[in-house]
Image (cartoon, rainbow, N blue to C red; front, side, top):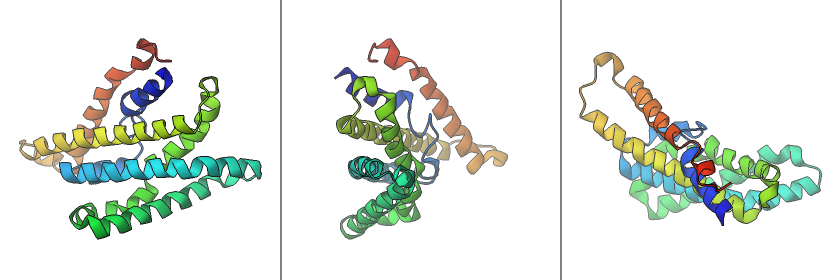
Amino acid sequence: MKFYIALLVMGILTQNFTLSKFLGICPFLGVSKKLNTALGMSAAVIFVMLLSTAATYPLNILLEKCGLGYLQTIVFILVIAALVQMVEIVMKKYMKPLYNSLGIYLPLITTNCAVLGVVILNIENITGYAAYGFGFAHAMVNSFAAGAGFMLAMVLFAGVRSRLEAADIPKSLQGLPITLIAASIVSLSFLGFSGIVEGMGLM
């Protein structure tokens, strides 16, 4: 149970995919202007991460048994692309306003390195956390934690950007410069969580 808690804490806080590993920066900067779009994108990413893990974990075992481990990345990308297409079709039919507000960033989940990163990291964790018996359930928890961390980063940054709109920003910093400065400050705030897993005695 402690290991599951450690995976959640690491994925959400200490090893946040966006603010610590800098994965998924494109949607983080592009869809975080409004809270509702940030939440919608985050929910879609969590869903795709969980489905991708559920599909790629057994596929990786099959690839390894067949001696085709070198095809891992290509197969994972194809699986993620298919899942994103499925999510896009469902959202277009049942959640039209959210689909329209996400625009081009929804199909970009296919190339969101955070999604590919989490499925590859899960495979690496089988060896890295062998002492804890890292398996399918751990991989699913790790994927959920990564997605929840992505959502936390998106929601926090959406709040920051809403405050920026009302701020008196020098002309030379308006637009992308102040956005990147704000993103770096938000990411620095997560450094305060480093060592929390060890401090709590979770691992």
